[in-house]
Image 1: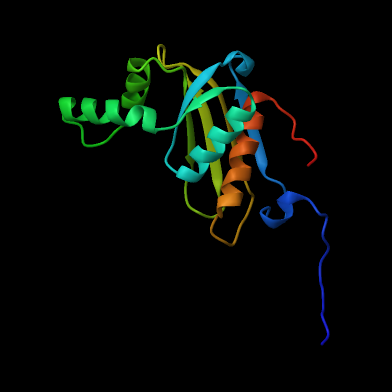
Image 2: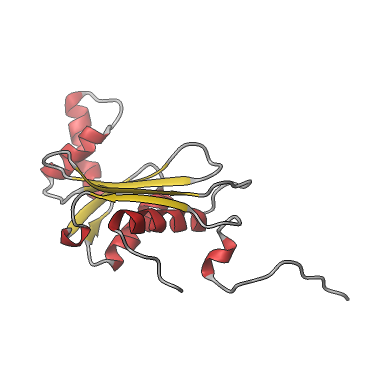
Length: 167
């Protein structure tokens, strides 16, 4: 039996999820993220929400998932006869339960190439505290859980001004 190996391996954890080149990352810290003590994470993709929850917890932030807001949102939607829950409803529910800022963690656009956008919004003022996004320049495959986790972490690091570590 003959095995043929092609390509090279660098041995980094990102080798399996980066499609040839590192992601393009941008970020805008409008307020010092280090002051953030707690937050609620909300988003349109559970993979990006879960990745944001884990990353923020590692930064020492007390983080609450969407379940904290679900009951309040359901009650408010029924009371206001809402069919869709929009960003204003999420901010109002977070303010009602006394949560810190809401971190929106969303997969953006079509599946290829994948992009993740994150931003923290103050529940009292609606002001964007910080934002970031990360995307791959090109991708021929559907984004995996690992791909979206990497992009979420990269977007958060861009928003916070944190340099990646060499794992």
